[in-house]
Length: 268
Image (cartoon, rainbow, N blue to C red):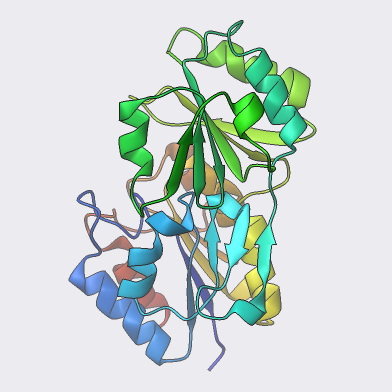
């Protein structure tokens, strides 16, 4: 049997809308593991907000967090840590011009430490999962290390303007994407970093060619991973651009999309 590497996005893909894993999909993933295939999580979430699913599936593999900006092995410290943060100077420049572009708040994450430029109860609720260390205060002084990622909170009126500024001034050092409605958020990580970038490091480590990588996703932060993988599979609920580049489309995250596809492809 040729071993496959199976990469799972979380929200909208592995997880149902209620943020649980369906019993059928979980059973198929466990069967795949029993037959010797490797299963990894590849998510935009930080590790602290994906750890519960890593443990629920009993994974013993590295994990891709922050869309590839942080890759590590929770169960094997000797595997090392691959951390690709943003340059601090670029982040401070964005902070300096924040008032010009009507930015409401900026949130910076340094792996599991979270820094807020301003107090914001709504954003605090989002990041509290996993009990991170949270600090609030002017990021120009509070932030001492290169951040893993940053989030810019703005409004509908200014989000295009801010993204145009980021592309014009910082395109060589950062990559940005906006969240879906109703959030007017821009997520920023280091240029050249994405899920495929993180996943390739794991595939190379285990000597698995990309032709035997099966990746599942649903959103624009999955585009590079779905395009790179030998089997790039879009969920039935995925955005249209992802379906267009995918090798195949499975059923939705509410209809056991991962479980159905793995059972058929791997004859579980």
